[in-house]
Length: 478
Image 1 (cartoon, rainbow, N blue to C red):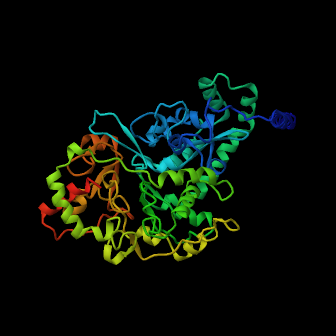
Image 2: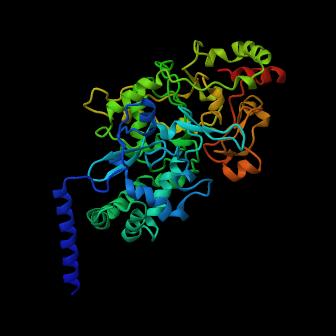
């Protein structure tokens, strides 16, 4: 009897697969009017695909219902559904938030794109509307939290075909009989396996402090991807997400926090692969459109009414003397690497990118015109232009200093503070990082944990307090 039931089940699965193959259409139709590419470059940046779906995508309708099926596995942060991870919902007609993309093959898949890491938010006051700012570091987005949510959901008892199909039908009454069969007998099981396989790849998460919102470990995943041994490797490569403004200015500069690459285009491809694309799935045409757009994408200006022009002019003279050499657009040392012993900031991110990894990165894209050739090992951190610096808080490469005031007054750097609270601190210049509201809506950041050190970069301490205050006023104008 048991063998008969097993044979019946196998036969049913085979019939479903045959029907699927003969049908020749995508299972589970995507959101009406949605696409993998958009004529408007702004919409394309926010919702278009760069090719991550094939490798790390989740079927659209399963992705839609996971926050309700696995509500208890979501982080304890404000908002509903994926907002609790940091995704931004514009209320647009795409059925998914900014930073997610969609491709349709047999099953429509949701992936991640450039906007996942490079779109942030700001509120002028607690009761003010939230502004979504393109090109800004994604101060609210917890990429590791997203991966952890998917894993926790996949092992939860409610992650089963009956519960998932029922949840899909509740929001999509047109989910057809064939859709239900394919999802019940094929798709749900494959999704669980794919998520758990990815969790095994990410096992190194468990030996390092949590990355938290607005940050990511970019290069430890590459070690796994390229087959380098992680045995005995406990380096913490977590760093703040960068801005994407004015990339034309950055051509020829040493990029990434440690300056390990000096090609903007190669850096962009590396980022897309880091987000889940593969050399085969990378959408070069889509990525090129975004590359062209961010060459001259400008940061928003600091509100003029909040700048003291007289004080800012005093600060300009301080900047020209104390900062311009390393950070002005035409500065002698801008875009070059300062040895870590001189800058004295936390060295974990630098140490995580090894000489062996630099060599291995050269294997990516083998046989293609764009094969990587620009990665190298450095001995420090790169000086960066400060365009839009007011929106790039928290500061230092690991986001360990909440405001410009704390950066320039090192004695005021807090040991712990809260990240991802997006109400702006117009006095200290950064985001409010302490107090009841920040504690309720933010995520605790502890500078005592490995990779989170807030020491170093004490340039300017020789200046008088008044000069430093004037400098902060000028930095608002960049």
